[in-house]
Image (tube, rainbow, N blue to C red; front, side, top):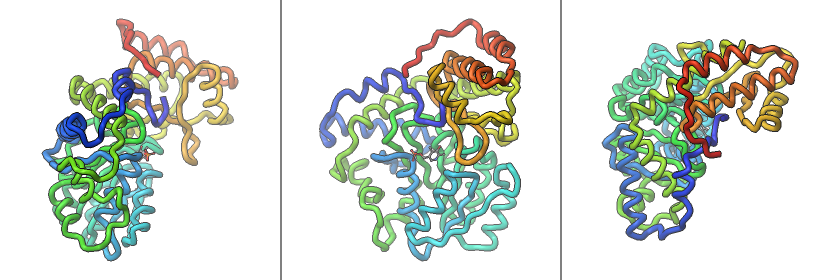
Length: 381
Ligand SMILES: *Cc1c(COP(=O)(O)O)cnc(C)c1O
């Protein structure tokens, strides 16, 4: 129940039990359907949707290394660890980087970005929709990507924790590149990611003359496999089969219902944590529903808390990079009543073991009354 990898449905696990030919007819059909379901997932008509044998960071790296090279300039909007990764990767491919952060604990505002775009000529802007490291959300994403588009700046959006957990409209919001990974919002297995390029972005890639720094992440080469069904590198067939199944389940549930399920469970968890006596890190306005950052109690070590929860109650949540918070995931299968309840139970009991009195009883009473009738949905660990 941490910030990923997240539990997956049984069907997703079972889908990867067989290794098939990566260039056979079955795989071709799987690839075509992943792209089709990917269009629904990203809300795009893009024909250039590619799977990647790699983590979300490989998706990030594919976006960066195809659109940036020496002489190109990127504006990196830094809200935390993952946002900053864009800057590291951009430097790695020799681009000129300008990185900005909000002055206080808030998401980026349109006027700040407008000022930057007026002052400098950027080729690319990078932004993370939901910053997992601190549970913050860029609530003005749509305005920012539309603004960048009007300035002729290509936008790369990290949608790892938000895609399939809350509304995300690639085409309508004028996003040029976006990606997500199996182990977060999609509730699929880690190691396989999905990326989509707009026509505008793919044109830039096709016209570039600079050598491509990454052979495996070269979008023109990926096109061969993902559009022409020709060899690029051996595709992670089992990973793609389980990704296909995860996408099928998303389509079956429908994005609308899935968004509502995420919002409902996250709000119940937030309210229950509040009743228990916890404070959330991100101000409500900017709070990311899919990964909740919770302020730690004074004199409690997050490490000890996590250890007790794991060893005595068999519930895993995440710590954080540097901040005195812990994080509870609310992505995909994490948003099931049984799972949320177990976190609340384990958290309350563990805090007591640490000598802190939290009002677990009222929190669970509230949760149970809100979730009634008792839900017995499946949980596969
Ligand atoms: C987890 C995460 C990443 C990195 O994912 P890896 O699969 O570990 O590379 C990037 N961006 C966001 C928003 C994430 O939550």
